[in-house]
Image (cartoon, rainbow, N blue to C red; front, side, top):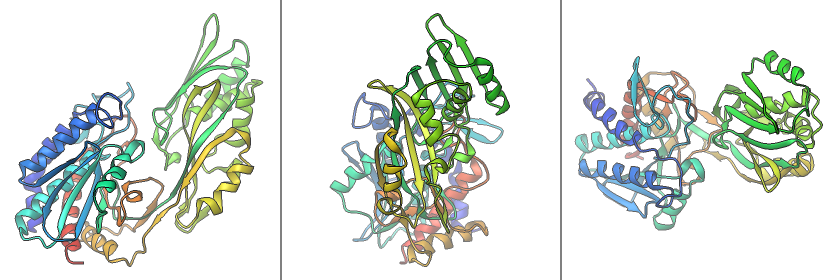
Length: 447
């Protein structure tokens, strides 16, 4: 049996136990201690202790990030993962911070995004240290604590340390992500005559799975609204209070980069109110510029190249300074430029309701790059798969850390419910990840 495969099998129980430990930390961004919250800080400390237990060098970078390192030499192969997670709802079928096995699936927030990838990478380093103790380069597992809400942890790391020379982030898909779409973020916001309050979504980079709207009494036709939502198969509740009507609409969460996999509760609520005849400036503008579109169709933003299509997602809704606000997350094709291809459209067709927009340009590596080839060769050796390299709309640490791309951790068998209720991972996925990372590191040592 292949020595890496054999050692991976040997370490599977330890992988599960280490992952169970990291999942137990509710490392959602908070302001209750450290740069990103007490739980993030404690999770980082625990991960560093795991490295020390294996006899590796472990360094805390002021609780913004940390790293675990083996090997020697000037060159550094980086593995850049994150320990923070997105918020959870109260509709999980298990405790999201107690890893729970049901029918071969291990449920818990972070099992797939990205604590599982971090543990598999750490285990791959342990395997390498056993089969190739004299490493000619350093291998450094860098763990950030703020990927889901701004990547400040890795930016801070780069103020203290040099960029890595090559490497990957275990936070995308196999066989490899050689391009990441550009991103544009901002608000669709303005005045409303009839919305008293609105709360929707849990993260700006996710399709919202709920929205609750308080509305002035009798400002829309309730029968038409109910008929619209039933026709579209949308679960909803309408409650009448003395002072207001309250509309609750349930959707289906998904990552903002794949809005076609979700059902946008905010957009369906706005379209239902528009259909029900509400006389409201915000609802009218939302209908005219957003609607149910997920490709920016009403904005003239339905752009594409040979690698993919622009996506448009409204993620959260709230009231701020008297305006109804919804967050907008746009992912645009890898060969395009924000200033050249999007900025003018946002400023002219978006009108006064699109506010505070800015963009980050795409990431792109050619497929014949030696680093890309080293990782692809490892994946194909482990899996014998015929999957093709891809680009994606999701953003990873590869945008922040130079010289890396996303390599795994999605092995493709399931919808892992990343950023959704009931996120999970399987033992087989963890095995594949660990083997691929160990073989990829061996290949990267040779370039």
